[in-house]
Image 1 (tube, rainbow, N blue to C red):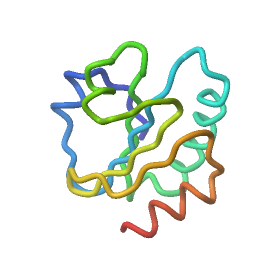
Image 2 (image 1 turned 90 degrees about the vertical axis):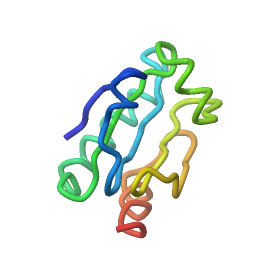
Image 3 (image 1 turned 45 degrees about the vertical axis):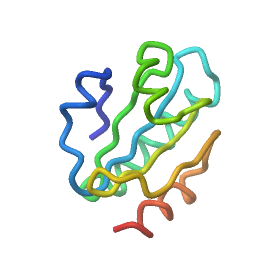
Length: 103
């Protein structure tokens, strides 16, 4: 399941297991394409990873706290700790590999 969250919701989210966070902007073309990739990833691995989407423009405090400087940025957390970060538009096999390497 892909869930869009704001800063407060993010901080209340259960971060156990694998959580992939997509920092995006609604005005960004590559971010819109990334949404399709994440939908496919969710269909394939949805039982193994939780996917959260954070709007870069509306959650500046969280973006700064996580050190995100551009979008789209994918950050993979395992039990609350960052394990991998990818910037820019990514292809599905790259995202799948990143998740599977951290199961």
